[in-house]
Length: 368
Image 1 (cartoon, rainbow, N blue to C red):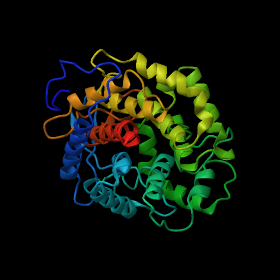
Image 2 (image 1 turned 180 degrees about the vertical axis):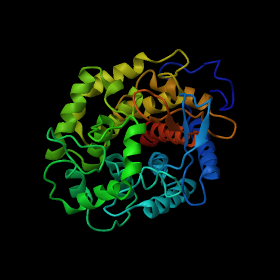
Image 3 (image 1 turned 135 degrees about the horizontal axis):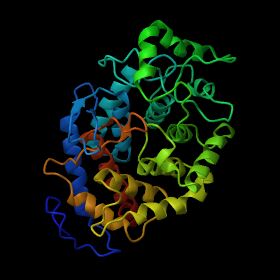
């Protein structure tokens, strides 16, 4: 096994050889050290907006609440680690402080100029609430599940945005959070004009996060059907305006499956096959270190533990930087034109740490 700072050009791991436990733990510890040094004092994790996927052109800090939700969620498998728990506690406090009426979160933090302009979204609600429940946080009443269920289209799928729509809406909380756009009508119109999103957006990746939060209940059956249909039609690259990377869709679907939504079983084999088809000789999955981490987590979530997985984990370890981070890459986008997107070293590192933690739990903790 190579040192975690050595060049990835040389590859020595056999196809079915499990990566050494100490090597995995060393990479996790190094990654946690990086994150703890780069978490802001208020608990937020850094996020940038950029135009190119490797984020090597213009790139600016952008204070998004969602990025912290994602990085913190990646650390949940390591909550027994003291250093991870300290970060989780800070992130939990930050997210609680950013929460608005109805257990909703804004897309951008209260430091961002668009904080009061962008409508509330169902993705932040689902991702954030699932994280807070995992943390055992006592949330204010009322429960936001009714608010979420009140934001569905006629086909049973969930709208992305909380906005005023034509038709009867009897949920008072929905009116209260949707009326946000009427407080700034001109800037609200500008928001819809300059961005690729629309008022009627229904995004499958976001619906998958809602499925993860709500679980397999009658109201989420249309989401399960839509996921199966999308994977069967090989349309995972174009089923969501924000999650434009198929590996991200695989990751989100695998999270829901691993959490108990076993009706997604029909998509397990096709997704595994598609992930493994992208494997390079050195173990990389997809076209980036972020893809590789998302792919590893997805494979483990789906119960795949065979050839290809170990090489991918070793590839992640070999590409860890000296300071413990992994290269930034766009995680979510501003629309199908791919004009801009969001990512950071912290986001990529969060996913790489999650992949290594899940790998350790799968192949080492279960054998002791």
